[in-house]
Length: 53
Image 1 (spheres, helix red, strand yellow):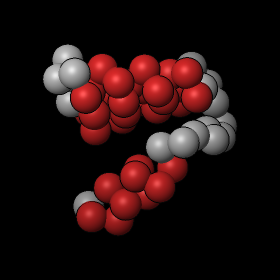
Image 2: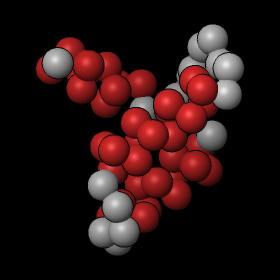
Image 3: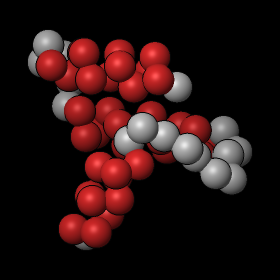
């Protein structure tokens, strides 16, 4: 997943899409595919975003 993480960050830096919404969509698709657990480089930022809600 580090490749996907890097691609998402690179594309967001270029302004192609919003980092947070793309991050969330990427993680949601993994969950929809049936994952019970998701280990991700996005863990810290997702935890921070969830704490704000």
